[in-house]
Amino acid sequence: MPEANRDVMSQWPAIEELALTRSRGLPIHDFLRNSKAAYDAKRDTLKLQLSADNVDKATAESIRTCLGKACYQVLGFSPQLEVTTSPSAPVAHKVRVDVPTREPLSGTAAGGDSEFLTSSRIPAGLDFGHFVVGPSNQLAAAAAVAVAENPGKSYNPLFIHGGVGLGKTHLLSAIARKLLPTRPRIRMLSCEEFVNQFVAALKNGRTEEMRKELRDSDALLIDDIHFLAGKEQTQEEFFHTFNHLHQLGKQIVLTSDSLPRDIPNLEDRLISRFHWGLAVKVEPPCTETRMAIVRKKAELRGISVPDDVVQFLADNIVTNVRELEGAVVQLAALSSMSARPITLPLAHEALRHLVRSRPAPARIATDDIIELVCEHYSVRRNDLLSQRRTKNLAFPRHVAMFLAKELTQLTLTEIGNFFGGRDHSTVLHAINKIKGLRLKDAELRSELERFELQLRRPMG
Image (cartoon, rainbow, N blue to C red; front, side, top):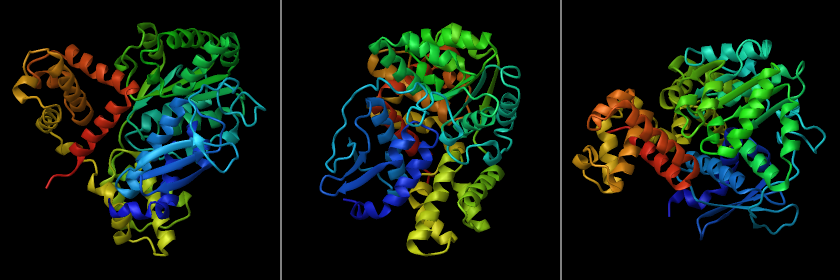
């Protein structure tokens, strides 16, 4: 058993803070904020008790994923996670898989007093003033400000896409905060929440009520719209809601991990409408922007971070703004708990696990991807690159193509040439297939994350 297992609970404040940081602006944030943790060393299991009657299956999975990543960042490993619920009793019981039936659609109302978003429900710091602008996100930030200042006219819809942890949710929240004084009826929710609420509406015969709640909005902001992939009935409902709001000049803002045309199993008519306005990409920040982000996050927490530590963080966390913020949180937590000042040696200690597996995109080669995939799935390189289409080869080949697109700078055509001279449409099909499977297969998601961690680990 790793040595770190013995003091999981001593690290819980840092784990909890990271999990809350990661979940900021998401529906699971309040669940995490009102939870209690205990650690069972014999079973290597971290138990999280939520103050709730029950949570649905998707919410429980989102909590486990968020908490698992925070554990890995602090401890260097992720223990087994057990999520339980209890409204008030000291003894927890297992999560019951259920769908909430009478919650406001946006999930933002406090105590049911209002169906619409209020400024108190937007986490502090998620505004334009706290968004660090650099070359990687300048266009997206400018478009977001334009939409907030001139809703329904500048760019409608505004479609913001990019990788995980680059600030898409921050921009969505900043737009909502700016709109509230003049547009009080705002809906802001994750696509996962939208889908869950639609399922609940179907189950309980509330589809008309749901439509009315949505279509009374002054603005509709949905995070992670790619979650609509493959959900035909939900796409149908969203299509008509989109049309209704757009025709009335109501602002629509969507975020996604990819362009509309690259979202698998998304109806053509939705793809077309998502391109009616402006689609902007948020790229990983450059070194100077990363340094500015570290300083801004430190300033918000009222801590002083020396220049050499700022440089260290910016050099070692290169693709994810959320991880940068998490690193500042972790560093501040260790400094506070150990009563030591923030120094470069302390930064090395606090972030040893994160730095050990830090991203190094330029060093990832397609050959390394193929070697790793072949080894994992027990197939030969020559077979993987051949024209054979048997099932035992097709899936590993699709995974390898997906990883090549995610982790290298190769174009679809270049990837196709590398994989036996396949055309770009074949490569795109493979990538979209894995994207679709990843959304509904937790085991594949974990597998892809492990591949990425191994490939991003520095060599030598």
